[in-house]
Amino acid sequence: MDAREFFLERHRNLHTAVFGQILERVPQEQFRVRPHPELNSLAWVLWHVARCEDVSVNRVVADRPQVVHEGGWDPTLLAKPTDEVCDIAFPIE
Image (cartoon, rainbow, N blue to C red; front, side):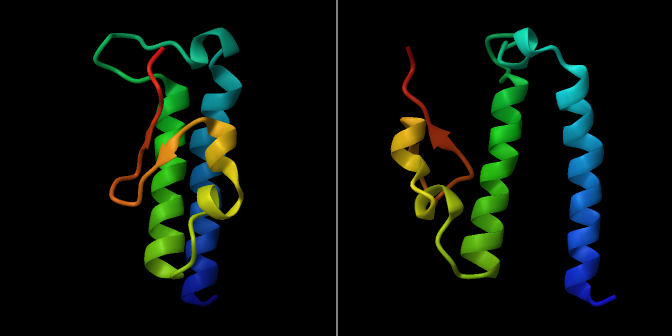
């Protein structure tokens, strides 16, 4: 097993264990709820993790465009992705 295979296996295990359990155990009606005004929802946290992965793997490691840009997700999400942080600025309603 080379370094790439090792990383991919560990990454897959992490996603399956952590994200799978969250998605299975948290009721949909609670998924987007902010438990406190200063805390983010689980949906936001998972989005944040995915964006950090997109930035770090595609921009830093592979020197490729981020999936969110290349896949045309920008207008679909009604968001303004940034390269400076692993975040997206969503309009506040």
